[in-house]
Image (cartoon, rainbow, N blue to C red; front, side):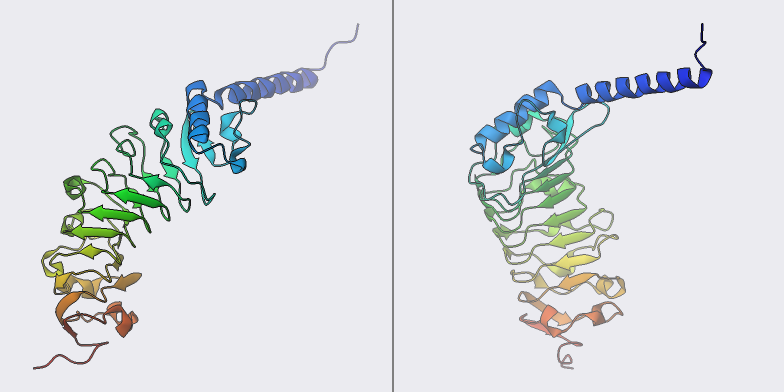
Length: 282
């Protein structure tokens, strides 16, 4: 009788373990409740052809635009990007309670931004992108995610008061119809590094804010911001800086990095002066 060689036994055992791990991960790669929620999302979006791969015969974590936790199989990312879908934001998203990222940019979503799109309902959500849609109404007070991008919608009204206590890293509200005071987004100890408020109707005193220590992008052009540019701006290593077309006055703080930006980044204000604009009058 021929004895099995130890090396062959080890190889066979490894093969069994690998197959078991694959089977276990395949089972985990589709939490049943999350799969049902995703199918409900697809239905609410009108079952678009681009999401035909979202079907009950395939593990949901292999679907286009979906990522999952490799251990639990819970859905962590939901991306439906630039599919020209016309629908409200699907309510079934609220059932995907382990989401970290939601990206529905460049569709034709309409209606208001639902209150469940925030850490109150989705406690792990840190990235919300709804750019380039047709969303209306005010921003809900729950939308306090670390990276928030709502560019190019039809949003109106003031920012919610909850934004003053939120911990943002990147906020982009460009090209909406938002109004009122946005100064609550500033603060020396806040982690905010990029703030984009261009082409809205915000009105606040820029000279009274404290620039966040991490901030290296500030774009607030085409608003009604008044006051002066904070002196601290001179020492910052700006990657982007634009305060044009507001109601600002006074000397432009002179620093190595503010000198990188030409006159167009300061133009159209009430009485800003000094490089790269004409000198201040004595």
